[in-house]
Image 1 (spheres, one colour):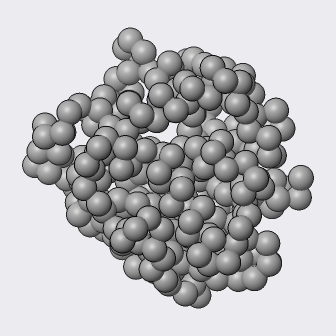
Image 2: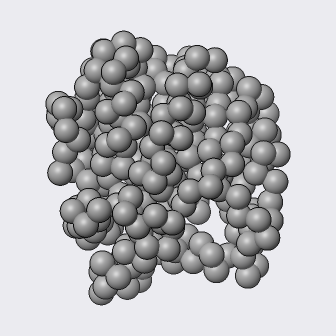
Length: 290
């Protein structure tokens, strides 16, 4: 499936690795990154709106959708640092040396790392319904970890998680599409089928992406925290209120990383760009005006 009105390209970003990228519009550039277990299609509503006055780039992340899925050779192939470098290289190849960046879920972690590593390139940052990797692991402790059981499953050494997921991939990936959506109509059957197919075909790379968050990604965050590195650009975070289920100070955690922070609590499910695209579009336009 494709986003109507968008042109599609394959853009080389790292040796022989290429990303599938949808692009439309003109004006200041913004890049939109998807999460798990999905593809660039999550942005179909928001991207079409923003393309009225922005150049909008919507890639499939490395290892997802129609982008390349290299084997993880060194435990760092799917680090958020390397995936963030992909996005910077992609934008540069398409003529943009600086751009705003928004990400959801896994894409928000890639966006966060890209903004930390490339502060002169990322002009604005938006993160949808996620905590930075280091904070996520701090929150998901004890019995609260059951909520994020997939994080622990896919953190295991190569072999077991891939085999378990491959035994019932639609059940596994569909579980999250169902559990995390408050409005089932937001993901129609054809889009859901596209997500499940894409995920079935990317099990090793999806697991490698999650495994990296338990190892190298956490280490990169720890190093930046120790060095006092923070985000200098305007940052907007849209996040669910988990209440007593996950009792943590989301605003406080994000403010440790970003001085210029706008944090908003959303009332949709996890897939906010599909359940309430107008909420996301309004927030992004406000961010770009800061």
